[in-house]
Length: 590
Image (cartoon, rainbow, N blue to C red; front, side):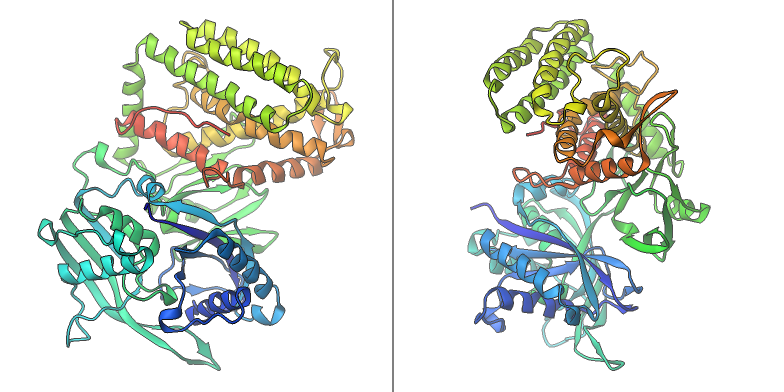
């Protein structure tokens, strides 16, 4: 049986300054479970396989008052219904003012089912052979014989810590046969004591363990799956207080530019700034985001791959310097979608990526470009087919039959011009069907004169420009050339690759716009006519942006991924293709 577990991501805010109080977080988790299942016990061997970690935080980190941090809960061998009951109980418990003395629950995402295959993709940078370093953020308790102060971990002890934990979480089937002769282990650990809580100025329960780094060299193929599971589910025998939580690092020096960090690391993700007039600052190793002089969010810099600023924001040269020191590119929108820039440290690897992208694209034959363009055009059409299937009504079957036939035509195209011709056919069918989906007559564009007000087109132009902006800034942040398009010609003077990727995400964005209009969140009164044409009022722009961002944060129940993740992942995939790491493929929305 393939191991699987549920994760629940939550955001808390600290109500006072101080170290992270793990006893409090442990009590919140325990009491929420007891609320969900009255009469159940939480003691010794009866403790269910539920645990947590504070994402990207070391045991010694100090939280400032109002600082927001992420707590991830993990549920192994526990069914979806139990996870749902726990989630509801957690919300209810933390909604009580008396339970908000230390931490306040700010946000709870939908639980996500993760499988070993998901982790294999996320932790693709962990090799079967070579070197990997595990950086322990939380103390790892272990018994190394009579000497309880010992800080070295032998291969046999490491095997016990890893396989023993997975046995508890998933049973005997996942213990694995770890070949201790195939690798070497070195440790740089030191004993530390974790104070889990504080009362009346006095620290209470203390947990002793080791922090630091564990480096493995050699062949890990016999236990690579166990290792990547531990990246999420920790090391060691204890479930409580995040013990044994670590993040993996790439060990050693890269042998070539191609071996440098070309895979998006799971604990390094893009940070998109989408709120208007945000202030960005750095405190210690954390990026802080303020709005109206209030701290809204904070993110550990060691978990950020790129900062992508999509709206007007304020930041200092110190902010840029701190990001550059950590190798975090900052891509910035300057207002219009065609005006942007990226600030980054001029490292050799960035230029190598750009060079590889140009060489890879230049090596493609005309037939290969046509094939790639066919895939993009067909993928876009089938995404709209998916929308129409979900919004079924009288006449849908007729349109779907025509659209399916149009989608099949792309396979017959032998030139880019033919593909564009077939795309024109599918677009006409799509817009014919769209008319019936719009419930507000003011937004229908059927039989509208050339110079009449077109609220629908104005809205779509705005949201598609925001989509394009997100794509082009992401490509720039990753060091790619956004002008090397396939379906949209690389000979044109616009970012044709960004336009290609935009096509893949038009359908879900359009779907959000239809909901916006049909739910009366956007009305004709939200537009004003000027000498330059129809424009959207400022208040309505905020509403549209909120809906747009909500769509990008929505989790697809089939894939367990958000649109934000899929768009970024598509750009990373192109980067890896340019570096010869993978084949080219395209995101398909359902």
